[in-house]
Length: 228
Image (cartoon, rainbow, N blue to C red; front, side, top):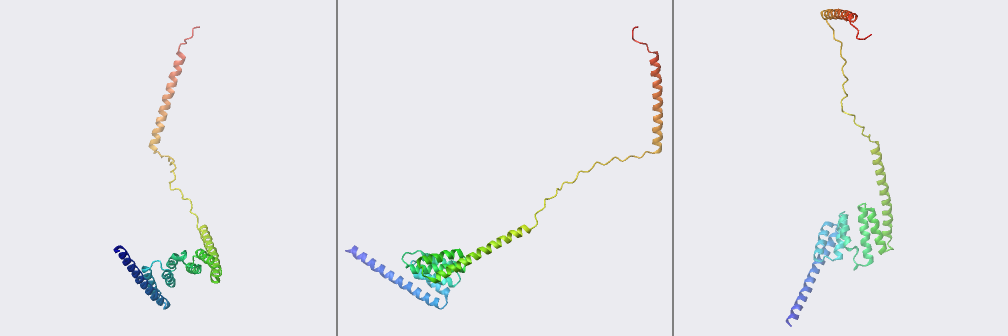
């Protein structure tokens, strides 16, 4: 009996605690909604975050948080907030389609046209009769094509500018040219040196004549070795 009584107390306390937390969550949601409608988007964001602290699985708080961030032009964070709800099975197809539609709008604001196209397609899969989403998808497709065309033009322009730039010329060799051997310059001789050279040449010539005379005389008087 004591165990059953103790369990009953825990159950009652848990229900009471959950009820209190739910009341606090609802209070933050109501306050955030009032601030949102008064264009106080930053204050609304704070209250919706407080509501999520009380109940992290609250789809209402998560959805309104994304709306508040979107109104502050914080498109990346708004997509993150909505992405927590995009694939939840406990939401109706129409609600999920509306979430994907909002994500597509955030991607469009960030000029992420390919991501926007996929978001709008997901919305139309859930709600094929949504004309607003169909129109936004058509617009995203045109903008994506235009963006691709501009990127191609910019790339071609950059390539043309690179081709116009002067090509680097081959560097010339820094090696110094070999010096040509200097030609020997004729040296001038003095008059005295010239006279001495002539005198020496005469003496040499005289000695040569005397030597030839002696050799001629020797050849005449030389005996033959031949035995007749």
